[in-house]
Length: 112
Image (cartoon, rainbow, N blue to C red):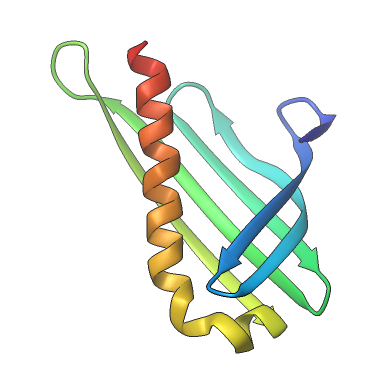
């Protein structure tokens, strides 16, 4: 992770394995909207050898009872190129698992 401009833009490197296909994306991430701690919306453009991906993601946090927060998260992701051709059938399941693992990790850190 490399912060280009705080609260505006950063670069990231993300590796993912989809079955036997493994790829590393170099991504540029831009915050489109940042209303801390209520809402965040970002745009991502990533490139890897022979592939690219674009995504827009939004997270909304709202109070949900005593000492609880409800989080709504969605992402619209488009992947093209070699990775899409070779691993398209695996993408949905792997994406769901990775998102679940990420948010479980966040929850665990918050609960510490």
